[in-house]
Image 1 (cartoon, rainbow, N blue to C red):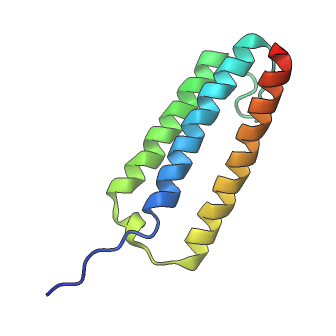
Image 2 (spheres, one colour):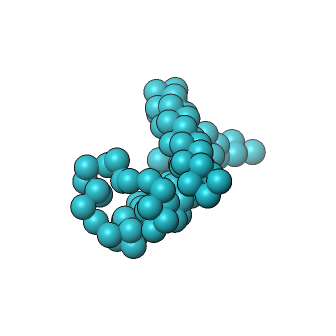
Length: 105
């Protein structure tokens, strides 16, 4: 009987793709409403739609990793790195929600 394939990085990479997509949507919404400003210097000069397009493309690229052998890596370093990135992204999304909420109150 063969050993089943494990995918220890599938959930963290998938979560990162979803978090990035939600960040793109909230950033687009916040930029259009004037509630936030883009803090990323690489994206700050772009229109809200262009920022969303870049973040959408990045989410698609991250999701593409789900279909590679990268998800089968059993590396603690990668798991901790992805966990840290997901926590940072969660904090950024929380800031978006707070700013947008205060804008509409």
